[in-house]
Amino acid sequence: MSLAALLISVLALALSGLTFWWHNWRPGKLSVGTPHTYAGHTAADQLVLEFPFVFFNKGAKTVIVDNLRVRLPEQDGEPLTFVATVERLGTDTGRAFATPFFVGPGQAIRMICEFQRNPGGNRLAARHCIVQLDARLNGRTQWTPIHEFPLNVTEDALAMLSRFLVVRENRLES
Figure (cartoon, rainbow, N blue to C red):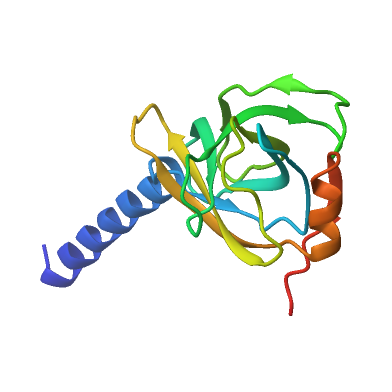
């Protein structure tokens, strides 16, 4: 057997193994779209935020999302807990308790997630702040940051948020 034939055979086997791994065993990785709208309500006893997310799995294996939470790193206080999903932002239409969900390989899922903190603690301020979305993935117990995005709370939005749950545009450009 010539050296060239052996080398070609080994390279073909390695390429086949790599291709099989890439298509079947590559770990799932979530990509999350930045929300361009949000709904919220802020009071002394409760802070409620709803965000429409799109979760996309870039990997070859299914990703199981056991739980979500939202943190406002610039504020002290507890994270906001994932409590429900709704079909329409700012309404109770199709409201369901938060449950684990999965995102299959190459699959995208649109989901409006509601997060709450009781008591409300530090209230939102009229400013541009950063929101961090954390998840517990695939049965693990530690929280993993999966997306960070800007939240733009304007003065007029803040006045409305303190009275009732209202949908606002999350203007991302200055």
